[in-house]
Amino acid sequence: MHFPPIAERPWLVSYGRRRARKLTPGKADLMETLLPRIAVRLQPDEGFIQNTPDEIAKAHPRIWLEIGFGGGEHLAEQAARHPDVLCIGCEPFIDGVAKLLDDVNDRGLENVRILPEDARLLLEALPDASIERVFILFPDPWPKIRHQKRRIVSQQTLDLVERILKPGGELRLATDHVDYAIWMLAQVVQHQGFEWQAERDVDWKTAPSDWVSTRYEQKTRAQGREPVYYLLKKKTSKK
Ligand SMILES: C[S@@+](CC[C@H](N)C(=O)[O-])C[C@H]1O[C@@H](n2cnc3c(N)ncnc32)[C@H](O)[C@@H]1O
Image (cartoon, rainbow, N blue to C red):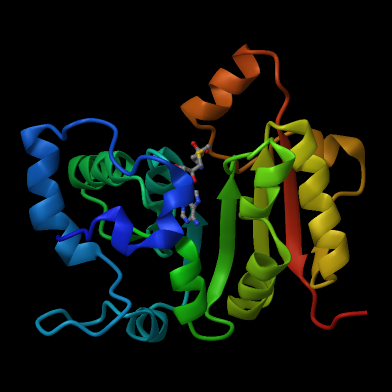
């Protein structure tokens, strides 16, 4: 697939490099062959059917969406565990996209779709109440105060997620960054569209039983940082 240079896509500048290293021939090949088959197309593209957000939502009653899947470990494992759910992942980092393609190919996963782009483009394009679950796991923390406006968990993102979630749909957030953990909760409280499911400390200090742990998360723990896990449900009406 063709990726326009970053200069033509100013919204991507904030992530830094889109490609860290040269892809292996196998991964480069998957970018040319597998990605076009499973990519989400924001605009209808002749020759590809059922790949626009509308078409995908119509064809699949159960869809989960991961924003910023990194290397795709979590998305691939969720897809393998839940063959009845379509798992869509968004990630502008091409090395991560290629790694997920490798996994999809090796494991023969049929229920994965990828948008190799800013997730907000898909959040804007998906129909209302079309998604069952959204994951934003260990998003870039942007620790400097002047960069905090780049954080993906924001009122704008929460508005978009609330709109596309089905009634009772779930938003799962995780971070290992203390300041971002506080920020996330403050954003959720301010937004009022979501109900935090935790009843006791242990509910957000430990991963839920169906959690898929990634290498990123294991590294975090090994470095002595304790992640937080927020399970939020879309409210039926704002109070
Ligand atoms: C710290 S990494 C975590 C990756 C993965 N979720 C994990 O837990 O291993 C954050 C990822 O989010 C991606 N990202 C940042 N902003 C994004 C956006 N607007 N849309 C989609 N992905 C985004 C980055 O490229 C990066 O791969």
